[in-house]
Length: 159
Image (cartoon, rainbow, N blue to C red; front, top):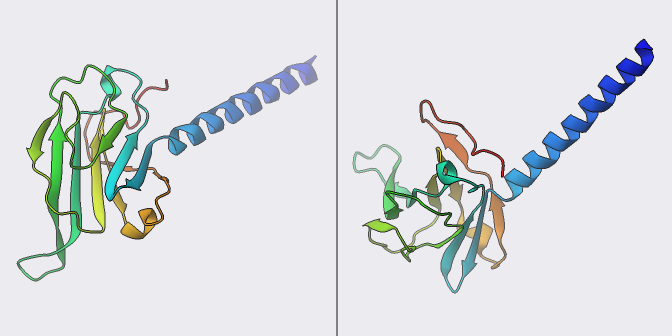
């Protein structure tokens, strides 16, 4: 009888592990996709399955602007939009074009590479995107990393 219980417990652990791994992989694959279309960066933001996880803000900055003090480089904001009351998902954003329901905080400047993209949903995430990644016109998948935010979930609830 104990062999049967152990076998059943092992089967449950294996099944739950495979389920979690498949969900994690899917979540990572769908988290952020960037593609260059007609010389514009089109971002697809996944994981928006409830009001808490809807896109609230998006920033695009360059990361090669020389720092005025001469010590390294600083971040130069190229474009930023925000939505104060997100009531629906915004799965696709074309950099430089203000999505419906959003306010433009920083008008689009000229796009200089590499770019840093910060996405605010339930948390703030960031990723650097080199121009070479998008130069062939195919979609490239990214998994932005969390940026310091106290008392927030790191990932939106699973859809």
